[in-house]
Length: 199
Image (tube, rainbow, N blue to C red; front, top):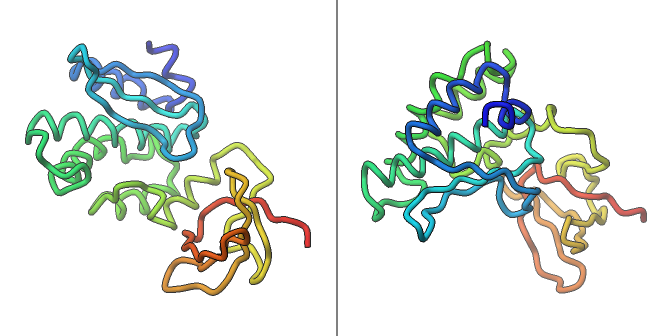
């Protein structure tokens, strides 16, 4: 498993991750990209516990996502299944598990202050922490997508699912965008990646 994991994780994190997976007897599956999630945890019918992570994530996001899912297993094991999926028990567990990894041997120096701030009160997904999400995306493979905050007002753009929108005003931290087919308004995080359409 070590060889398989080493191509997805930051080099100095592999041994620590293997210890966690072995300690908890977790099965890890690496899957093709899923648009709606980076990873998930589930209890299988045979009683085993499985974590799946997208193979398209850069090493730093892969590590954060994997620890996020391990924290689900450990929080449910310790506090019971009645807890909220991303409640205080999970937040506490995620923070404790993640702390040993937040060091310059694993993450680039420029990410460390943002990670330290994020893990004071971790969110259900790091995508909602816009500064951290943007900082992590600089380590992604290049693509032809643009961030919503870079899209000009009134410009049309397409999502991965083919839906076409027109960008509107910012409301607090998110952008109002109108889906052209239905006329419905949706709110987008500034770091959402979209394909700009030619006018």
